[in-house]
Length: 105
Image 1 (cartoon, one colour):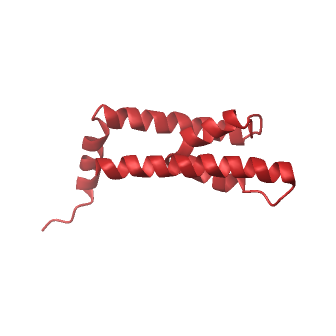
Image 2: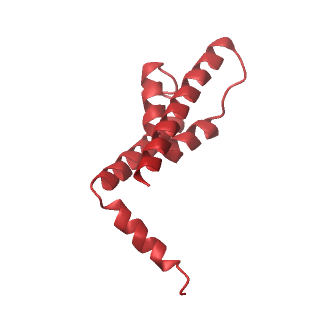
């Protein structure tokens, strides 16, 4: 399961980064934009570090509110969850939470 989490986080961050860069390009050329909802959804799904990195590298949506606030909230949550996962605290919490929903045999 650990490999799947790493793969998901890599894919979510690459996708979030690419969407932010594309949105910046679309904005510069007056093309149809990617919605803030879609960008924040990818940040929420684990791509917040990619969204944050892209915002700093291409200087996109750094002052746009409430987008920047929500991006920072998801970044903090993502970093906290990864830290709990790396420290081995998150998996037992998931196991005990899932045990509540198990149907007795």
